[in-house]
Image 1 (cartoon, rainbow, N blue to C red):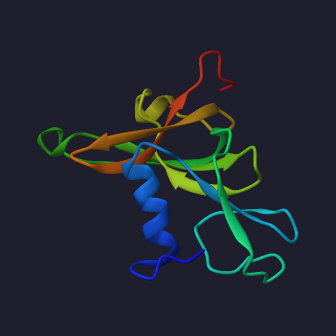
Image 2 (spheres, helix red, strand yellow; image 1 turned 90 degrees about the vertical axis):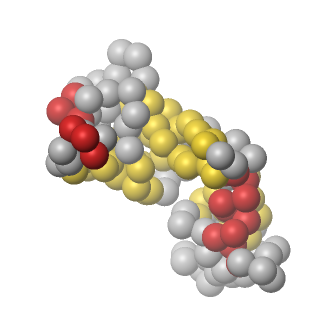
Length: 129
């Protein structure tokens, strides 16, 4: 299913704008697919459908972006491995950059600001660090 006005990226962003986090699954090989694509990177099939993942994941890697306090201060950029076996880039919002550790358990959340959805993560209570 391709959105002719913006393709799969537009479909993904439209779901975020409505407060939903969705990724694709290949209906032929069963693999979860992220970043949104027209074809499955595993088997080449064009038969992909959208679903809501669990949102649970683990921090695979993290770095801190340094900014002046007047520019918003430091923040983390993290690679997250989802339970569905895909990796994506985001940030952990409820922890200071120095508190985000590899192996930390996180949960996806969609924040919507002025109609624009953004995928972020929150550290889960009792997360491994």
